[in-house]
Structure formats: C-alpha cells, structure tokens
Length: 314
Image 1: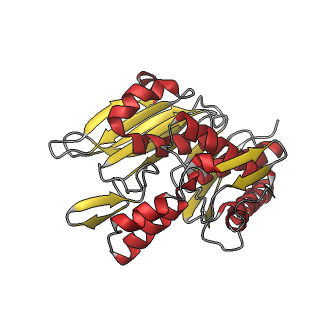
Image 2: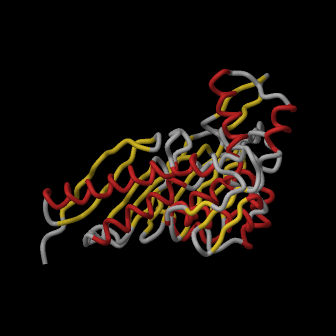
Image 3: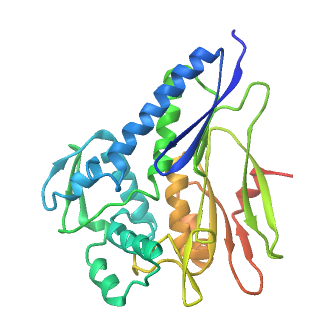
C-alpha cells in the first residue's frame, strides 16, 4: 500500500475559484488526475453556462416547442431540478432565467426593475413548462423561456468531479466550487473532513462554525452578501420564481445533504422559503439538514434542524 500524500489545486471556471484537495501516492498521478477533473469542469461549463451563447443550455432555449434530444448531463440536471421544484412548490425553479437576467442587469446598472417588466417576464417562468421523456428529450413549452442552472450547476459539477476522481482510484478528496463543497472518504488517519462556514449571530458578531463531514456535501446560499440597494432596501441576487422579485428579507442558508447537487438546490429553495416556511416544510424534503440565519433589525434570528447539531465541531 502506497503512502497517501495531500495535493491541492486551484482552478477558475463557472465564475468562481475552485479548490481541489486529493490524496494519492505521488505528484505525477495527482497532476494527471487533477487535469482530468478540470477537463470535466470545462465540459460541464460548456453545457450549463447561460453566459455562453454556444452552450448546450442556450441552444436548447433557442428551440421552444420542439422535442430536443440533449446530453446525459443536461437531461440529468434538468430532471433533478424538476424534482426539487415539485417538492418545494416552485421555490426552486430553473425556468426563472428571464427574471434572473433582469435582476442581474439591475445590479449592474443600479436601475430598479419596473412592475411591468417583472410581470411580463413572469409569463415565461414555470417549471411545469418543461416536458421530459425517457429518451432524454426536453421540450420547452413557451417561447422566450430561459433556463438558469445557477442554483444547482456548481453542486452537480462537484459531484461529477468526485466521480472522475473515484474512477481513477482517488477515494479521499474534497472539491470546493466556491462554497458548494463535496467530500468523499476522510483523509488518511482521520475520521472526517473538517469544513467551515461563517455567519453573523444575534449579537452581530461573525462566527466561523466548523463541521465534520464524510461522503457528504455542504452548500451555503442567501442574500446577506450579494445584493443591490434601492431606496434603502437590499435586493439579493436570489430571485423568488413565484413572484419575480429578488429577495429582500436578508437570509443565509447552509444545507447538508448526501450530494452537492441537492445541497446546492435546496440551499437556494430554503432561501426563497425563508425561515418560517422552512421550519414547517423542511421535514417534507429528502434527508436534509439546514442552518438558517434571518436578518432582523433587532438582531439576527438563528434556527437549525435537530440533526445539524450532530455535525458541529466545538
């Protein structure tokens, strides 16, 4: 049995800094496998990006009311997205692309969207306007639909990178897609990976909370950090697909799940739900742990699922 050494790599893609940590026998093998992992990320970016006009996602959106045969990856991520949409009553919805783009422009130009603009684009939004068949065929049922995978794509990619690593005999690794983190078996001679996230507590202090994980994923989402201010109200980069409005409640959600695809998607969904709905509805979701921070002028409110405590590092 060869000694397992730690190797770390950095890469930039999908608009974020990506970190890969893996354990293997030597630098040459580590370099070779990291190259394969980053090639996989590039491949998925070419499929999922809504910024690239030549992406498979955007080409699909150019063909409304057609049965379009798509790649295995695009079909899989759309199928999972629709399952999450159904379970969250549309709080997570990849058809919100037109609204997401409107608010993206608003943040760039510092111009508040009008009610009419939002109302007009809302007509193109609705996960029930996507049809799937078992033959990996997708139909977008309305003209002008634009899919946006920003709330699930990085998680899916992290899971796919781990598949590449495992296929090449790497069984202890961490992939960090800019906050969406997937880990496999723990490093040699340890029982868990130690990861961390930060939040602002009820006293206004920043807390760095460590967690111990193995063969799991963690994702953090919310509107506490990415936002634009209009007339003293902070509007997030996260949009409520059911209303067309960017979140303005001030929330941060951290989720733990069996894979990064679900952790990523449900972090977005719970952000839209908010704390009150999440408290009463999270039990209806697949096995999921969550930690929520709700901003309030009188001090942030904190809540987490009972099982979340099992992962805390004192």
